[in-house]
Figure 1 (cartoon, rainbow, N blue to C red):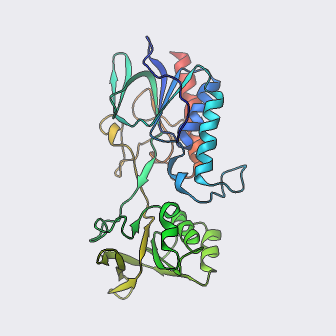
Figure 2: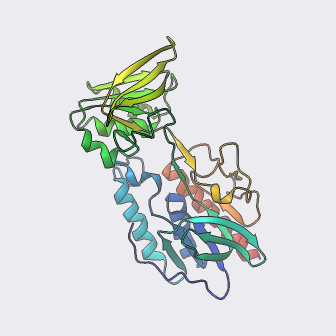
Figure 3: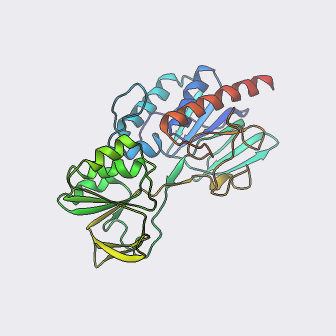
Length: 320
């Protein structure tokens, strides 16, 4: 995401706040930080979060329908409109370490830039979980893909599979039904995590097929994908599905490697937070969005948690 940015050389004194992440949580916090005149630097590789690749988002409050790319543009525009001289936007940067020092919290990026602040908001989001079966790595970008918006049109008129029974899986299936010959969705469990209205819409399509209680076991092919083997957990039989494309929507992993050993994480490396104020186990560090142990991961919830964190950060800084 291109955007004009305020220069982000270290000032003589620390920043009030470092926001790590440019998804809904980070952007919402950035907007509120600007309004409260907190000297803030927002560090992110891109703006928009996971939804940037979504073809259609229909539950962003106030907007009946918007693409992920357009939502990301609106995030960047909102930040540019309010940043004034208090919020610096350090885009195309990835934080690789965070530590507490006598001066405050010290963040370092992959490119070597360094920032010091009184407080930190971790809003680093999550990344798509890879399919871990034989052949998945070999055929990545040769039929195995993690982005329907990017690669879906390449499979026009072909039989494809989608792995994942959440909203992302069904939304990907609906998108693919516009041009694929057929779409088969495979889900490990018997019940779906997706919203019923999304499931019903997909199931109503004549070219949609759904397999539940199955486990992918191998991606097959020669130069490109030709099939997907899976275990039918009801019959305990291994079966094969003839497909040319496999779209993976198997959940996400939190982007929290840089705070391991800094704040308390749960068993799957999500940042543990107090839901009342988004505080972490470390004084002066907050977290919001999909990198946390928040039960429900949605754009609107992430934005709300970012605002909640910022309100608490503001009070905390003013009391110091």
